[in-house]
Image (cartoon, rainbow, N blue to C red; front, side, top):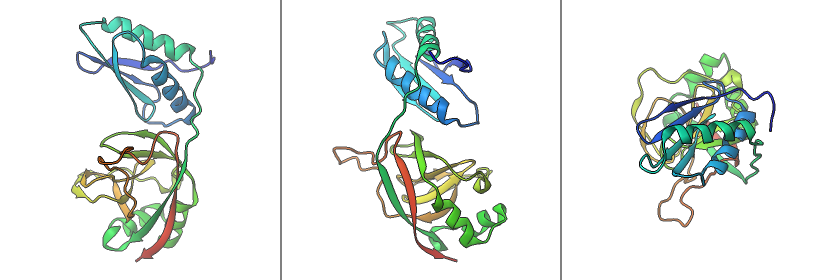
Length: 222
């Protein structure tokens, strides 16, 4: 058992699901490792139908006719208390990006918000290795941890109705890539041709939790 772990909040999410929230808005790689471990352990528990790891949270869907919510809650609480965090080591995926121009409409404003010249902001964005903390929001969408804190920017107050597939984006302290065209309040920095989700493929989702992502600068259109 790992000592010193902060007790999470566990709340009902409808009549047949529980949401474990471990760190609020503050992402922690250590906590995320515990989320992955608990998800793996509780997936086979009585009455559990599905587990969905998120960014420092975990949704547990269960059969309310087969098991009482209090039983699932206690199982989840004990798993969190006793589990050893799981280190996930996946593949590294390089994602080539054309920054700015019509395909990166927020690049200039984002760089100005960060107090940086455009080229330096791009270089910082592409300088680090990101980790896929979770897949969610839509099929294949990666929540990427590791963004330089100086590059963070709160999400837009008014989401756009349509952000294209392949858009390279940031929202708050997280980075991401759009796997399909959909509404989003994240800021668009550029575009990639890499396809993150293909329902016809044997493995529809390109990225998995624990994978590493590196953005490669192909061009910067100012």
